[in-house]
Length: 236
Image (cartoon, rainbow, N blue to C red; front, top):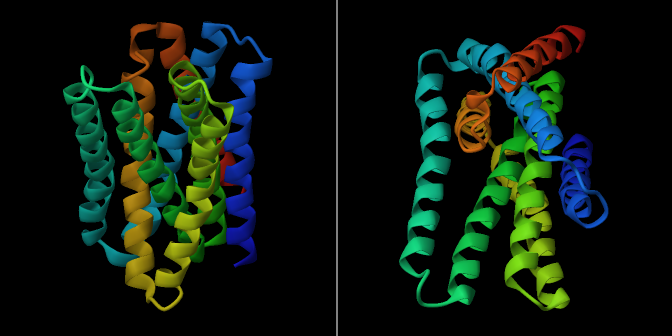
């Protein structure tokens, strides 16, 4: 439980950092792309080099089903919320905001839930936290920028963003209530789900959506991120 509390607090700081960046710093697009590329590599490496082999040791081929589920679920969530946003685009900006923010909140809840894989091992918990934090910063940046461009009330912006920030600790708490009374199979299944989620984040959300594959240097930065994740794994 102390580890989970530390993990939750870390995600809160990462989310707040994502909100601070657009307000106080003018980062060049290239710098942001390099950060995203390295992050994609690290998150991909954590999933492939550590999480998947570990859960496979515990539950074998069944783990691959949960990996697929972890990849497909956020893909379906994104598709649902994006399609709803497009359908209501001509109707109301407020509706668009509600639907879009709902998607961010669901993702934030999932981020917290998967932090419970620390029960597999301390190393697994630390690497999962790293992946979530690296993902949290650019996502928070995107959400905060979106809110500022569509909403004028600072109170509403702050309230919505605070909900997004706190949904991760809430997800961690809900997950702990489930995992605390569970056996190794369910914990391993959550670990496998986390692997799929990380593959989705690294490959589709970061590498494809941000078009990192179009630039050779950014591809090399992604490979560097994978090397960094391997180095971290060997050192933990």
